[in-house]
Length: 584
Image (cartoon, rainbow, N blue to C red; front, side):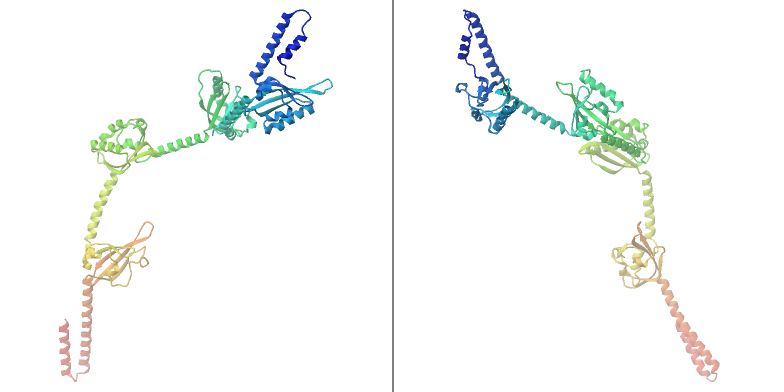
């Protein structure tokens, strides 16, 4: 279609004029046509489109003014040839354009494509082309006509929309929590991968097909339907976050928290679904553990007091109430302020003011205290522990523990007295006593043992026992000891400081620890030096008397058998009696 200009229009109108002088009607018709043409040109400019037509023989185009403006060409330069269009079509899109023209002429079908162009001023644009073949009565193509529209802004907007959609879809997909978009009728329109994992359903089986109502436990459905209706009908203010029980594809019931928000400008909602099942089970286990912990604390003999960071009593066991003479039960103490409790327990302390000052000092310093001895009235004594509690680096209260040691202190006093008595007995014992370690080193000896060897204690302690004995028997070695009986060595010889022998009776008792490992021995030494001296003298006298008796018997025998020598017998008798007198 050739461009219609003003001159050709005037010529055509002149030929169409009637023979009469109806100049007014002609003027009106001319003005109407001009107005239509101006509006058409304006419409092309506003919509950024134009019309074109291809010659079936040469394929040369004819453009309207709108096409010239879209492509950035000057209309005064006139129409272009077919291949002149390569200058404006993007090199990468020319084959698409050319192949589309061939397609239309060969098939007689309509075609529609988007092309990139480069205008003479260098600006890149995107155009949308629609082509329709015009046929005669014999179905022969006599022309191809169509439109060109600049869709650059539309394409850019579409790209931004795709980018935005991609961004929000990616965000939706990767929120880290199961998420769904729900339509007004409760149909699930979109789910992410986390929801697939949570529910067990695939996206294909849910999106646009399932209602969320079939995934909620029946007991919770009425409440959730109420919230759903309130949210869409702007009735009241339904909660934006709540818990419910969810049923997955396998029928497992899960505890979930739902966070819901309306999508602006729609009646759709987006919901994030968090699986709280493990958390709830952990909370239940924690509560069970806490109950067990409190039960254990309640039954401890030690008095327990747990105080919060806000200085409120969180827990006290019965032993605490009993120990501090409180009329309140442990349950009644819960929630007491520490100031109120201190006033109640203050009279129980033996020195009340000092005790309360010390408590305040401990709290102020906020450092652990272990085994601090506290004195109460009625001669009661306890050990106090103070334990600051931290969760992470944050203080989270404090624990006071009191252990009654009144009876233990009494027993300790008895043991000290008993130890003092036995130590006196051992030190003053008539027998020498010493203790060796497993290597035979002397660890202890009493005064009698020190006196027996004529060494001072310091000269003997930490020395090996073999330095003070003459015997070859290594009685201090484990293999020479018995686990079941005491071993006695009669006539055992020790060496004193002057290197003289000391005759003794030694009894040895091994010492074993709780694992029956040998750790040393106890030796008890009885001095038998005097007894040994008497025995030696007796033996010597016994030998002399025996010799005398033999001599007398010999003499008598001579008297009886040798009467012929009486003078000799008398002389022998005198000698024998002289010997007796000398040794008596």
